[in-house]
Image (cartoon, rainbow, N blue to C red; front, side, top):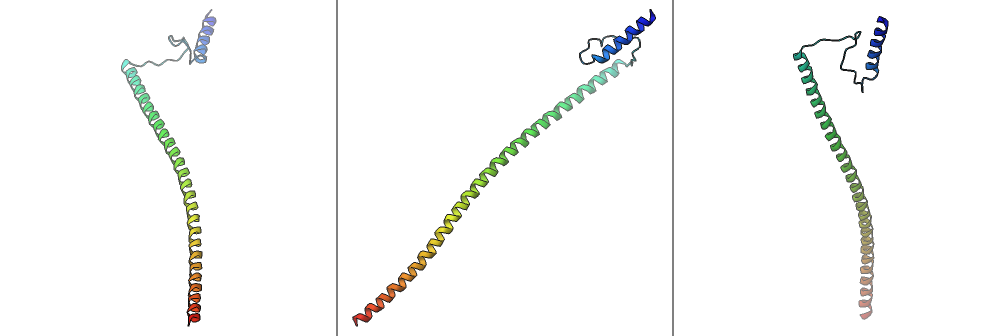
Length: 132
């Protein structure tokens, strides 16, 4: 009979250990289970420390979440700015190319203008020679 009680107690302890997360067997002490006795003040202190540490953990989690949100926002803003910068560089490159082409055309036109001026001057001098 004593062996049956011991086996039942051992089974109860094992059942409590196996079903720890969802067990409703935490309201009694099995005969062979090791227990610790604490005073009410010690218990209150433990509960207070647990609540305080839980609050600190929650605060740290919120701060981490907010930091991650800010980091993600900065990453998104960085990507948008990089895309905008690439677009502006592309436009600037296109404008530079157009500006260089216009400068080359201007130089060619100036050279042609100088050539035409020289030709006009030649023709004027020939005309004045023929008049004399």
